[in-house]
Length: 302
Image 1 (tube, rainbow, N blue to C red):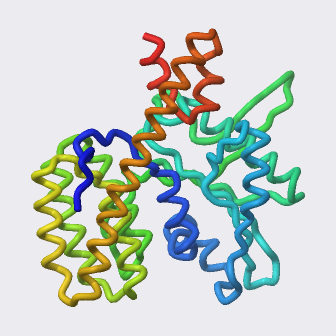
Image 2 (image 1 turned 90 degrees about the vertical axis):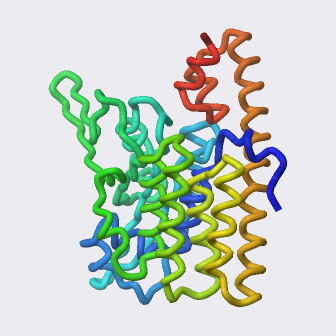
């Protein structure tokens, strides 16, 4: 059941994982990120995903890279609509320019939709020390500012994330545990075992239970074979009936198959980046067009 390359997995596709969770459980995410907007929203009207507009904005600003996680239109109880822009910033990604990028995203969406989006930045780890939490500029006395909602994952309250039956809350808690444990496999195992107990006590439907368990296993990213075998044994004991057990086995195989594919993609991206750098292409351009964080680009240069 375990992939032969499990010990060599280095990188995971966290972007798509968060994007899926945000879209599947949008209202839960909004309740955590912006409670006031969640309360003002008419949640009986379905959320409209603006994927095409998102792709256009991303292509125009990032040369085809889809770095924004979600752009959605919601209805309010007063009859108005709001655009919600949510971007998840992965640790080490993007350098110190997040406020500038958020301003660019906001401006491009405004030009496309003629409407101001409600901006949310979910920050999964500590940002560079000199980076601001909002956009500010001044040219010859002309001032421009843009403040968006910053959600610092490491500063969130565990009890609030785990309150009730929030599926997004459990995923965010798992992401927080992943950052706190770093590369300590034993610590990751202990967190994953505790989260598995929490997951097992939820009354979610089988589909949601599969999605959330897959997400937390993916986030905590055990690579040590001994710990992987131990968590497989532990989680399987939580699965009582045959249907759920088959679901679990299928889920676990998908997690590690996806990791293997992602590792191959990253290896190819690094090879391309090396060739670009050798040809004298600026490192910022290489990072933007390969999706490789600037810290790794600098390491390649050295």
